[in-house]
Amino acid sequence: MADSSDGMSFEILAAGIRDIRHDIPRLLSVLANKFEQALPERVHVTRHSGLFTRDNSITSIILEFDNVHYMLKHKAGRLEPLRQKVVHDVVLKTETLNFDEWIAEVLQQLIQESHHNENIRNMLDRFLTS
Image 1 (cartoon, rainbow, N blue to C red):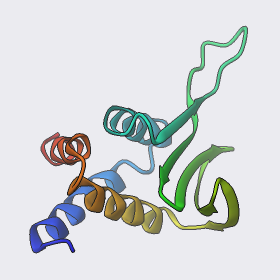
Image 2 (tube, helix red, strand yellow; image 1 turned 180 degrees about the vertical axis):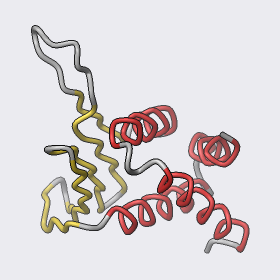
Image 3 (cartoon, rainbow, N blue to C red; image 1 turned 90 degrees about the vertical axis):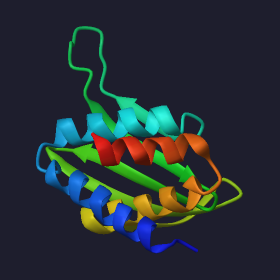
Image 4 (cartoon, rainbow, N blue to C red; image 1 turned 30 degrees about the vertical axis):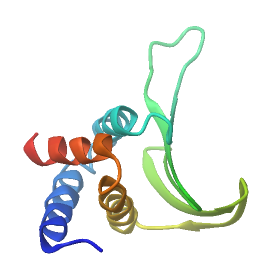
């Protein structure tokens, strides 16, 4: 169970991320960078690429936690936050969330995981101090 300092950290993290949510490319870049550093085995980042393009923008971020996957897609200038219920690598249900719900659930998962994973704990500390 999370203690009160986790709850306060959670609120600070969520507020910091919500502050940049209107700058979608920056938001996706920040989230992808942080998640790739802390959870390389659980995050999948898709970048736009092509033979004649210099655009290497992020089109989606997927975070995998046990039976739940959180996906953030960038489509037509908008964010599409999704939660997927997964059992034995089969997606049973996909739900669209609003961004505030999505980030709150992801950060709650990260806080829970941080009790067992030093990389995640360090990433959360960096979020708070940067």
